[in-house]
Length: 245
Image (cartoon, rainbow, N blue to C red):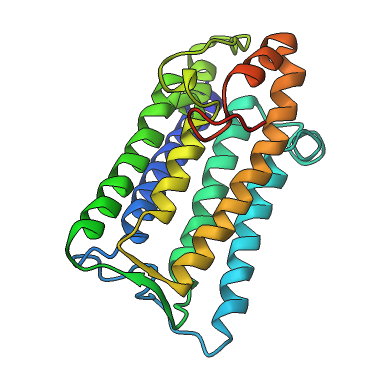
């Protein structure tokens, strides 16, 4: 019984770490005046090429997310762990990868655009808020607590078996197949001040998201078969009203 409580505690730590780091990420990518540190105001100044440092951090983040999500990694390195422990480990590792970005990301000189007032300032700010809000709400349409590993820990604590995956289309998912990623992409690019460093971060994360979706789509087709194939034919991936497999 003690093991179950420890796993649930581990899952809770992973869930809280995910919420804190993702919330900080949302604030970190926007030029809020109250933020002491942000994507253009580094915590640590490194005497290294900033592009190389930032690309390295993006690769670290992408590799951690991609490898740990793959079935072969789970079977080889986490086969003895319960589903709850696997989910919690992924959540903790993902949070640490984000923390490394917050700590060591280096600003790059140059500005793509800068709007400090006027119509474009408000348009981009509203898009920023809408994008992250859509991404957040979309997590609850599926299973917010399972997405970050908390439900798995709770089920193990209560002795409830993991449910069989089901396929259903609701709310945002009627218009795009991946509203979490779509909202995230909007939130990353919609900023009134787009520095060269911010652009590198947004493009790098965008490449990771698109790469991850390619693998996820294959997994979903394998899992749900013809039902998901029909869904792909009728619903765009990221852009509403635009067909993009």
